[in-house]
Amino acid sequence: MQAEVFFIFRLHSYITEFVKIILLWLDGETLDQYVKRTVGRSQPLPFDEVLQVLRPVAKALDYAHGKRIIHRDIKPSNIFVVLDGERKIRDVQVIDFGLASEIRRRTGFTSLASAFP
Image (cartoon, rainbow, N blue to C red; front, top):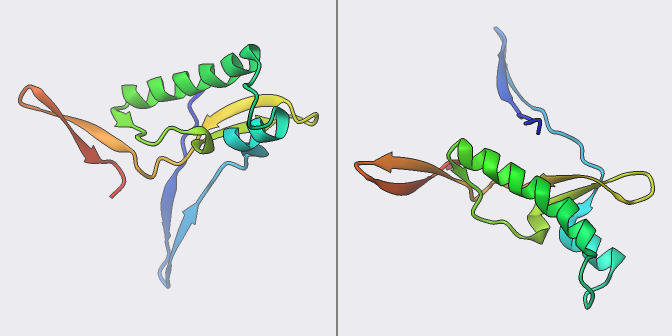
């Protein structure tokens, strides 16, 4: 798995200061949109597609947990399905870390602190 890192950096000049944010463009839809479009509300996704979605989600969460970050809001609308030209799943991304927390260890117990105040 390749981790993609997004940077926020400042460019200082003698006159003014600029803030640049670089984001990855994703072409697709959220998992809840994908399910509604492909199988409808009353049908489950086929098992092979479930695995195709859950494997990268589990890897992404494992990676975040390894960096001591807990997402705290995993749901279909925070899982983004990147589609190919035929509208089939090409990649899966976990999005919206707005409620994420950092795991901090203190004197033998674990506490959570907001990673993004």
